[in-house]
Length: 438
Image (cartoon, rainbow, N blue to C red; front, side, top):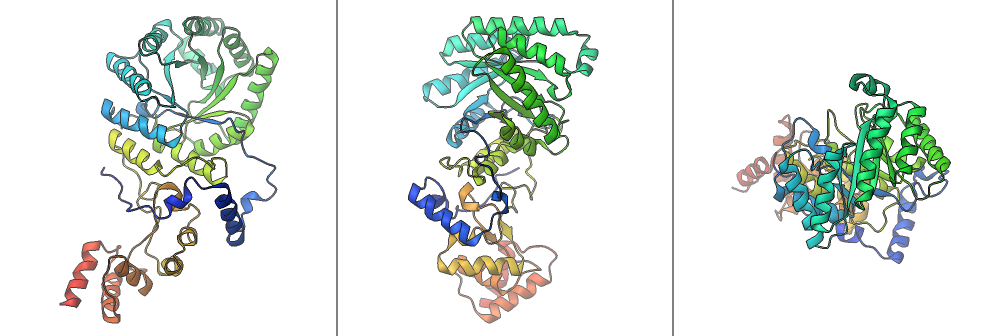
């Protein structure tokens, strides 16, 4: 797929990096023009201020069977875009799985070091010493702290298939955590299929991991089983287990898949219920139908007022870079990134947008028929000409291109549009312009 063409962002400068007085004035304007039912009975801040975002694109995302492994150059570009978006941490891969994976993780860590990047790095591996030692080597060679995400299946179905019992899982987990902690690396202990695991098993494993030095626990909805109720129950249960250990400052991750179409919703609920880090991938790529979508989590958090100082105008570049690197086709109607996300050919909708334009009011034009302000995320509203268009569409299209308009030209273009079953391309419109002008 080629890059998604969106034109010059409209209003992006005013949306990013505003001052406190600007933000206050914008808030007053929003309240004047938009009654926000989302804020009725809001109890306070949706999530705690220490929330962090963990990007799994270069690890879990590449487990999708339809993607290709990006080149190291493409991975470096994606890493820099994560940095630009303010994503706090990224999983760089499974260095114990192959020489290429090891070399790529090593090179990415060197980039973080050499460019003095703020993003923190992690790598994944099974609770097997042979998977942990490559992470230790990379960290020692680069001087970059690598957080170890050590995972093992914990659900009854997984135990049955693997012929594991709880003592085996606990022993392997403790051994892996011990090796990483002894080398001075932080460990996040990951129970695969957490959302289908028994509470007594999770309590035993979480307690053992903490006792051996793990500083984070990751709750994994590995097969996309959870609903928001399940998220609430599991997060609250885990917090009670942590409290019972007496340990302080144990972080809690949420890692969700999208098999029920609930990954985005579950991620947002996990934050409200008490997780302080959520995992996601660009465009939701991942095994089967994929993971929670990083760009949509950031978009929603921004619109909920949780990321006021975070500039997200690079979100489109981030998604485009990943789509190109892995050979992904973005659906036309995909939120934010899809070709039609901010495009209209409907006469009534276009007319309302156009009425705001002559006033120089890009803020209003960006919201009158859009719940997502395009300029805030590096895009712009687009007005096309099609079989449902009116004269407003045509006049706006012509003026945008510096073409003098008149009644005959507008009439001829509309006649051509009404005779088609799809939106007119720029070349088709220009063909009519040249014919009429001739």
